[in-house]
Image (tube, rainbow, N blue to C red):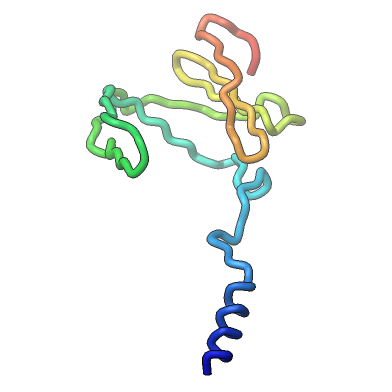
Length: 115
């Protein structure tokens, strides 16, 4: 009896265990034409203390500007790793590398270059 239990446990422990069966990839998770990205401008609220096991709830904050609009697009039709975000007061540049999104630039509103 003990031998059967031991064999079962050894067999069970030798099987691979996965918590997720997918990886974040550009093909599966990149921005695509028609995606809607929503950004809300809200009053500043101090998040409080930081650390592991903290939960912050900002759902009760009221928008400052209901009409705040941001347009995201690819400025270069051959380079889909560069993403541009056009806001009413500025332009932001992001670079997608592997599974990370990096902020790589910023243009104030008076400049008419870049994207």
